[in-house]
Length: 547
Picture 1: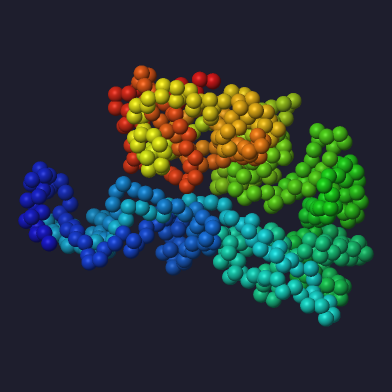
Picture 2: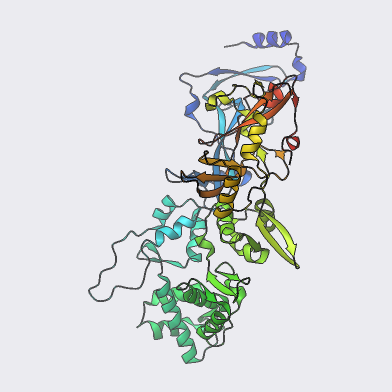
């Protein structure tokens, strides 16, 4: 171990003045059997730090096929490994200057042992809970009432709260909130979701009793409901129905009362009517719907936001069932699904189907700006699938030889084929390409450019170019051996391009598109164009695409 004199001699050699440094010097040494795999580092914000300091736990959740998330009791965080070029050392007991009780007047040497090291850490980012799986699990065995006579209940799987916490990538608080949203209830220690027809049967009993007793919808007594309806259905189910469709309160006599929510009752009635039909004539539906809701309640179309889709362009106008919970959870997949149903949406129509995708402090407007293109037609804001911006990423940061690409292992080395860049443009940035996912339009387009020999083809519609290390959205068209476009989808991932200096041009241009099958990410430690080009001029990306 070093002595204080050796440290001072080293400072003199380095021409560093002692008076410019703190008087306390740490002398570090590695302990026995130190390994980088012994510890994992995690970056925490103030909220999570306080959570840990209070003695609470953080839990990593996810099945083998799922991307891991970290959950506190209230929130869910995306969990990713971030690399750092600095080596991070674990030194127990090491203190910063502000943590030292009394800074000595004379130099002091403290020996400390390194217990471990790492060049990466877990990075956390708040995200929406992945909650769709919850309803899917509960729908494996919906509750449709108590068993009658000798009839036995279905032996299908049932889940306790602990089971759900093991399977669902969300915090306990988020799971409990969603259980309430889907009208689930706890029966004999297991969480069950009610069969919708049975739920409507319970609601029918309640509304019929209200009508027969001439009660106000805002003054429904719990005790009377349980006494009158207890012979028809379990009392716990009657109370659960009132909790789902009403607001609980106590009157001046301290009697438990419920105020039924008109919007919830009308919405449930509409779902019952729509679930058995592909499409309804809108005017006929509104007439039947109003006749079906309890007398005294008003059925309005604004009650169906996120439940039903209106088509005012058809003659006659129609309405069909489209529940937001049936759409994909992933943001990109959600937009793909919506735009495959309709090429154009009004902002009012699409907002209920994307509102749940918004993160903290994010609005539906900012989400639409990122994933769609808007315009105003006849005073109405219209959104449609955007012409995607080309974003070049990993390509210029990864040695192509390591990705098994038959091109020079360093970007922007000289290429012999002077036409390589033109070939790249012909293959991936074609004029007149479709901007929708309609198979018919892509069939005509591929037939026009006659590239049936390429089974998977990727295209970048160019609008305005920029350089980013974020993933890129682009079209993937899959071709079968019968010269038919089998499938078109929008894919989002980091893009790998081969980028070479074109002979006699003295410019670095993209010449090769490589499928990123392993979802490779940028590596800032690998050479990029700006370093590899040396005396070669770098062409800005807005000049690469001549449209």
